[in-house]
Image (tube, rainbow, N blue to C red; front, top):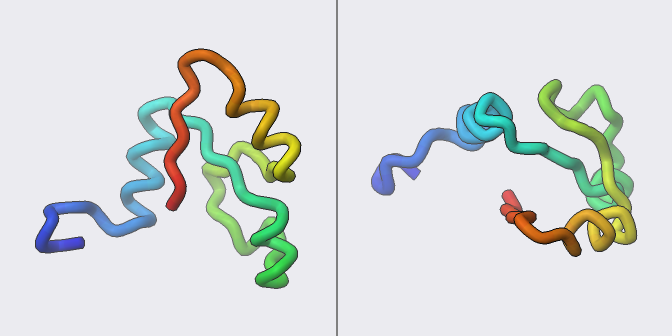
Length: 67
């Protein structure tokens, strides 16, 4: 990441959130890795199931970034 002049993931997520991006957690990943909401970043806008994801992704102007 340093060679590419990219900020660390936590800082990158903070930059995205501060710029108005919506940040969503994946319900399946949370279940698979036995995580709780407390384990996630404070800037998270919520947790989505795959169905929720498809409903949100099918709108004009939507841009997706997986980290």
